[in-house]
Length: 189
Image (cartoon, rainbow, N blue to C red; front, side, top):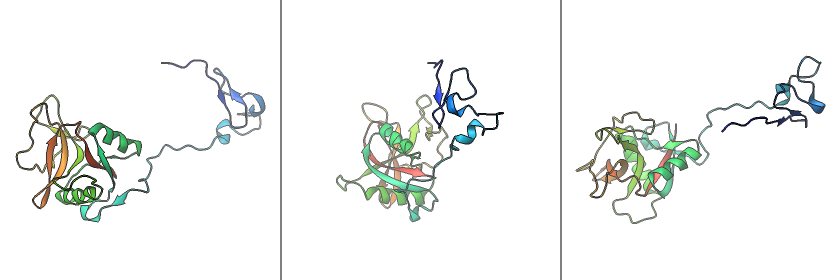
């Protein structure tokens, strides 16, 4: 869709017409006639990567400079949208220390039974090659601490998303269907 013939208002009430490069009305001092340039009246707008939201915390045992926030159960797509809405991303686990620390951190908000909680993390299987697991930026995941018998496929579909769970003393990955709901953490680098 294209917008044609739009006019814009200047901060002092003048306007710019669709074919104008100069303001009209009281702000007709854009350039060359002694007034300030048009952009001098406009506030500087910098599109800059925002810092982490104040609600995000460090998880010291993760041995990471990232900050995290845990959330209640959602599907993979809803979790991704939640993180993106905060200018963050779904947690990506790169080390065993981070996996172990995050499984404990995310469990702190678990409202369900304490039996074998599963937590959503970044990671999906390549839909064409079926042997490659990748991050949301499509980079191939190299840290894949799979649990016993994983990755596996469910009886009625493919388990194409990764969740984190505790197996014995360590956090491990488990393949799950992407529409299954799990607690999750957003990460801010």
